[in-house]
Image 1 (cartoon, helix red, strand yellow):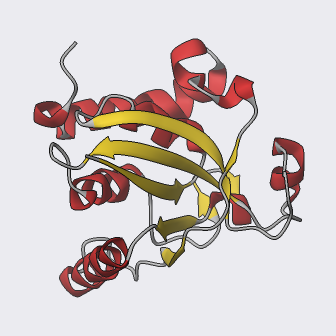
Image 2 (tube, rainbow, N blue to C red):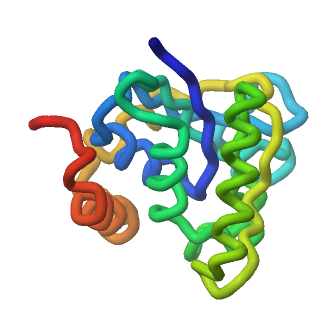
Length: 178
């Protein structure tokens, strides 16, 4: 049975590349959510004027992969303690957010945030927003499968590739079969 999750953890290229390799994931689409403008495009979102976050919308087989599993990868792949920032990427579009699609997802997300803070995992409070999923706007075609199509682009080599390598090391047992 398929379920949908929508997550924002900085640049969508990073999360897309990682989740495409996670077993149980059926599809990953980069896009925008959480803003107040209809039909946003990349230029508008990057201006910060639309309020949207760069997100990935993940369709996954809940019989093979839980929402909690998705969150484990999510929190390992970005810094959830910085407001509107991931590394050198700065702006509201790079915020950390979980857009829940069900009450169960909301409860799991809030419980996970509480556990991370109580355990002091990051040495700073987790600032990840938890909010209901709104309208999902798929990003332009050239953003889809970006790392797969552009592995030698400088940003991909400097930022995306190390995250993919970290994922492959930390979650080797959960990767799709090659």
